[in-house]
Length: 45
Image (cartoon, rainbow, N blue to C red; front, side, top):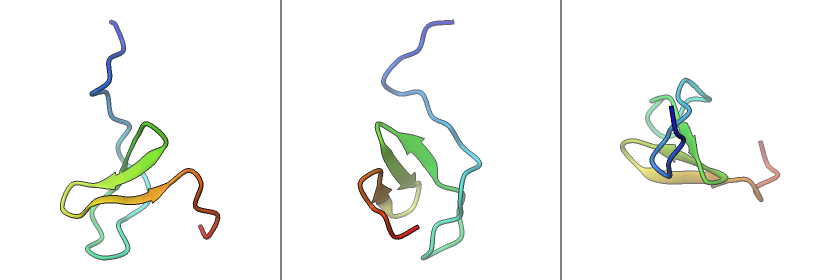
């Protein structure tokens, strides 16, 4: 199985706005409802 740019790691922390599980993509944590919520340079969580 080859990795590609659309691969997702799900089941992460919940979105602070809606509670949906965030997925990680390219050093960003993305909510399916709200888009990018955090990136890896955020040190607040």
